[in-house]
Amino acid sequence: MPFRLVSDDQQFRKWQWIEARVEKANNDHRPESFRLFVDTIQCDAEPLRAGKEGWPRRMQLLSQLKVFDDFAAVQAARIADGTSLALLRPSRIVGLDITPTKNADWTDDEKLKLLQLQSQGNLFDGDDESKQIRLLEKLPFDFHYRYECMVDGQAVSYRHKIVDWEAGALFRNLRRKFGPAGWEAHFREKYERELPARDLLLLLGTIHRFPEQWLAVSVICPPRPQPDDQHQDKLF
Image (cartoon, rainbow, N blue to C red; front, top):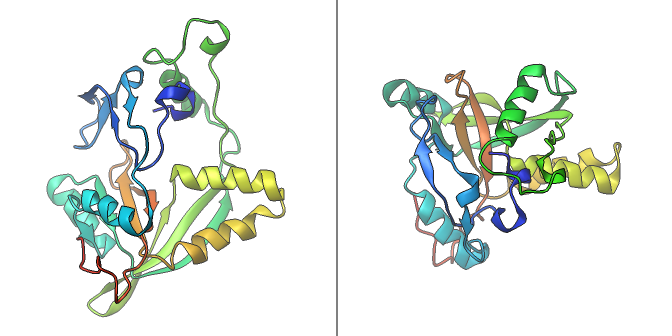
């Protein structure tokens, strides 16, 4: 869904409830895949708050998803029952790889897909300027988490690409503020130290055309329970 092209009053934030008309995607057999009609979006006034009271509510809603402690078990669930969206709790974040993208600009196939997305479903109002197709800026870097899962007392290493929208937004904000030479240290501070210090979860999702490949769709980081926390009981 081309979020940045949705009208201002229909744009929503993370952890915000929306209502919209959807239909099951007829060309995508993943169980979670639906077509969303963006012109029908209605947003709640405010997103679910964070903080000591808000995080338990957020995590209670996510408790409908099983939390895996090993990526191999995620793959096994995909093979067994078609799972294509999964929460994974790594035992340790080892590091963050930042590498230049293979293609600095969109490929022809990517451009075609963007144009198709941006022209679907009444995204534009009646004036000519808003009907112009605008290609989104492509991130010049790829971000990968290296992490470990404990399996039978042994650490097993994995690596997955982070495609969380928030990572891209953070990159752009830091690059504007600190310039091409200064953004990386601040980005690493966030993703290598600040987020792993919390109870980090990776929301993994498969690629439609390559179902055996998984991406880190979102990085979810509630605070770690404290010994005297009233909500210290596990929500999963």
